[in-house]
Every structure is written in C-alpha cells, then in structure tokens.
Length: 132
Image (cartoon, helix red, strand yellow):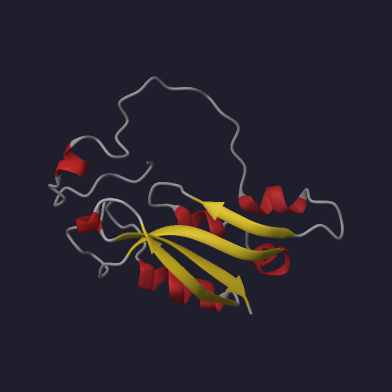
C-alpha cells in the first residue's frame, strides 16, 4: 500500500507484512479513474467497478470526480467495519465503512450489501453500492 501501516496494529496478519513493501519494484503506468472514464466511447457505461487498492479504495473512486456518478452503475470496495482511528485499521488514516457509505451517498450511491472477507478480527468486508 502507499499508506503507511498502522503502528498500533499488532495482529499476526499485520506483522506478516500485509501491504508491506517487501518485493522488487516495477515502474507501471498510472492514471486517475477520471482519465480512464474520459477515454470511454460515448454511450458506454461501466456496469461494475471493483476497487481493491490497499486502503486507498475510496480515494480511487473520488479520483473519478463527477464522471463516476455519470458513468458507473455499481461500485465494490473493500472496507473495514471499524470506527475511524481504530487501532485495528490496517493502514494509518484509511477510510472506514462508515466513511465510504457517507462519501458514496454524496455521489448518489446506496449501499446494496456487504460480505465478510477473511481475517475476522479485522472486520474486513467487500461492500457493493448501486447508483440511485
């Protein structure tokens, strides 16, 4: 992840290096979601956008600006169902489920449902929002 790990998080999962930079580096092309959506041909829409960006999922969606609301029907993000600032968040300053619900509601999306992801103590969920 580009976010620093949570120094208060001491689970075996976190200590094992979840999201840690322990591999070789590669240069890759990166663009914002807005740049990607701008390249869609007229009349083409995104049925389902899945984002898993190691704590930056909501930032990726927000990088799409107003084009997200115009062109994307459903969005799935990985969230942690914990209070803001919880010592169990994987990354420092990452969004929570509550933050994602509020932010996506402002963009015109309603929470459709969530499913648990492994690592119960982390309270991770894959949640899907639908355009209303």
